[in-house]
Amino acid sequence: LFRYAVKGKSIVTVADETAYIREYAKIIEYRFLGKITIGLDIEPSILDRPMMKMLLQPLVENSLYHGIKYKRAKGKIWVTGKMLRSEASEEERILLCVRDNGVGMDEEEVKRLQAEISKACKETEKGFGLANVNERIRMNFGMEYGMTIESEKGSGTKISIVIPAVKLYEKSQGELTSDGAEKEQKEEEERRSKERKMQEAMLSVKKKFGKNAILKGMNLQKGGTTIERNHQIGGHKA
Figure 1: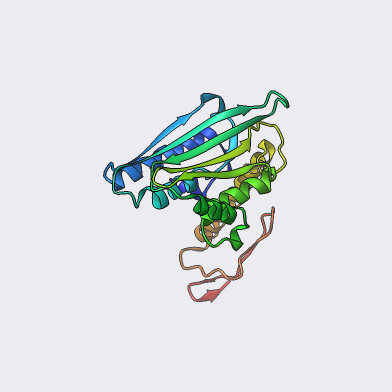
Figure 2: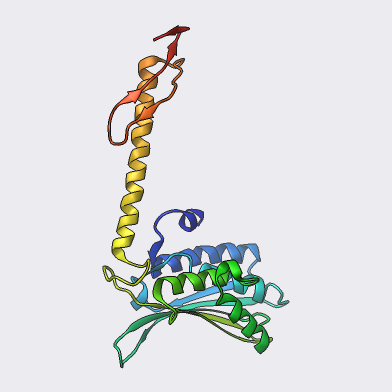
């Protein structure tokens, strides 16, 4: 889970994101001794569509700690996803929802929270995780996309996000492009390759000059093979 959250590509498929939520759900259900359960119902047609990573987890966490945690009875969180199709424009969008049966909010609380998450993250005073998700969506796809909140006091809350249903290799206006993901992966591979070459070069020097070699000012030229060495072996300068 930690590796998925902090490493790898920033673009994943809906299937990847929901698989992460399933594993996260196991931890939550174990931690709360089964008093809180998380269910998923994702339409198969959207599973292979790309999306930004870590859009759903902040919504689930919000339901958990602000909706269900203060409820004295068992709690339930539903995560759903489906395709939205417009007959007029033939545009496809993905609707992802996280709903809970927690304590809920009244109308004024909903308005305040909706206003907060519409601000930039650095300006919001509450709902930072939700604001971050909303900001990422709008920065990449435009103001017509983003997050909406519905809630009723004592009944629970539903948070919905809408993103474009981008197909593989179809360019979008922001981060969510397959070629962008490929570029990011290529850069990561190049970084790892440089690290391996550095380690191999250091190992080669160590083997050649012995364990007691003192290396000073090692400089690996970019893309080259020259290594400047200052070392001392057995008390004699070489």
